[in-house]
Image 1 (tube, rainbow, N blue to C red):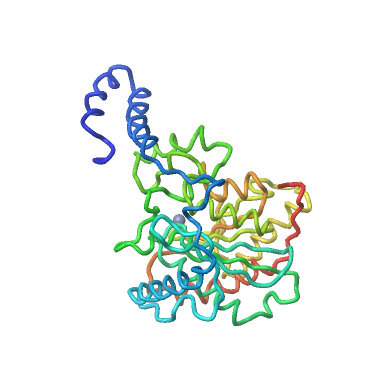
Image 2: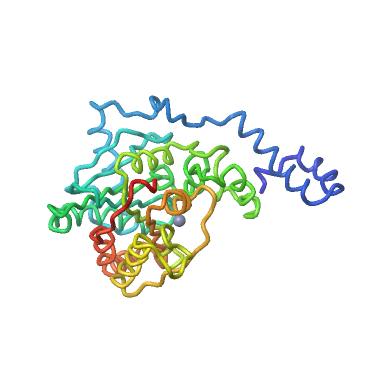
Length: 336
Ligand SMILES: [Zn+2]
């Protein structure tokens, strides 16, 4: 609260208390926002030049990043080098000068986008996302000649991970899973943050899509048009589903039935990991991709952020990961 509640605001709180709690909330939120609007360096989708890695530098930037990541992995006693054996791509870099890494496997319209490290302080998802990429590289039979494509972006928020102490947010203190342009963003994102007592780690940004990491995820969604998304988080301990058929019971359309079957099959393959209908937030991926664009979007919440448990989670969730990419979900372009 200290960084938000300045002296000026304390003076302004007195009339706010006089006028009631609504004004109180308004004044509390508007001043840091004004300050933010003045200093914010938002990313324009039309000018990505300062975030672009020149093609002739991409290879060396990725190599340097991968060795930095390998060093960081050792901190958690994760001994396998994360990038090993996989052909990575990165055209964009963050404010912290780290590449936004991704890779693709196979060809086809049955495309799954797998995201890790949106909230790097959760640790375990980053390990699993890199490991899944290496697994796909080593086991092409999962997708090859089956019309299956998998896109993996294992560490969406590298700046947050490579800090001395990993953080949920990026270098601009933005929670990337609140920064997507959803229909309710302008109406609700900052209001919803105020309910979290303006705690920085949930800050949705001053604008939607203000962060390069959000723009990066949007580009992946646009470029690869995934039929489904799997985003790995921790530590809430369930699968959350957003997409066709969400919150509905019968009668369902064939597409909604298929989407719900996908969730059920993935859960079954993950030792019947529980599925929970968790509320979604303004600016979240589940809201944008699942609710608005009707792309089945699974958020896996691992049970803990304990780096010692990654082998346990790998064994438990790998069959579910494979199921999520192999499930033959047919999306309808007219719905996008
Ligand atoms: Zn998370």
